[in-house]
Length: 299
Ligand code: PEP
Ligand code: MN
Image (cartoon, rainbow, N blue to C red):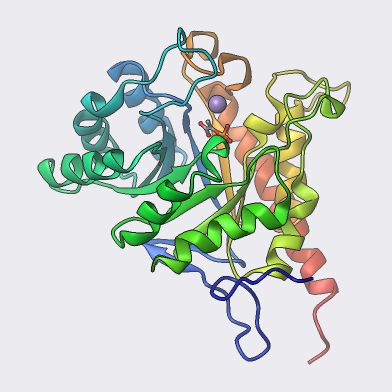
């Protein structure tokens, strides 16, 4: 039986997407936008170097985590709200219009709102629901109730696609349908030696079942920096696989000194790698557009 996606599903009479524009950035099923940045905010210098590099590369969006849900209570837990004012100011200084960052409870949304207000709204924020919270229904309802920020809902790594789509519908049913659906790989040893089993063949499936733009996160899917004999790192291969399938948003961990990253150091790209990475993404996007043209209905 088909699941009931009253708001986010595709219905006969209503074939347009539920894409949206936020702070000057377009999120739609026919667009692509990249969010490169730190998995977790650490030092001011690293944050500034990253934003400066993104600006030089013409980027106006970034990822920057402040609240980190960690497997071990002894691991670094993220800088929390202390870093928000200076991180937002630096984002604004380098022309970053939207920062994607995870929130793990409702109070974080208020902290983000307050820090933006106190600094004069130098940038915008996309609230990320991490894979560990895809079925935290009270959190889903809370981010769905607020209208200030759009949402990046990551697929649960151990539940079905339908269950994750219903999680997105939870947010929408509370009033906020500005949602990007994120694929980030599934937790199973069958994906070894990747950290997760790459699930980017589901990009067109989510496009077909829903009207949401779709994000892919090759960093968390692959989780390493291995390079194939063709010279192309696995993270780049996975990114290209998502993009050539029509993904609308890319979420990628980068760090000025990757082995100094405090979270997931094993998967971050260096800043020096980014020009060629973005060129590779552009090749995959152009290939997707050619594929789409090949299958377009005759006029
Ligand atoms: C992240 O993007 O920082 C993250 C923790 O991702 P996920 O929830 O997919 O593990
Ligand atoms: Mn992580």
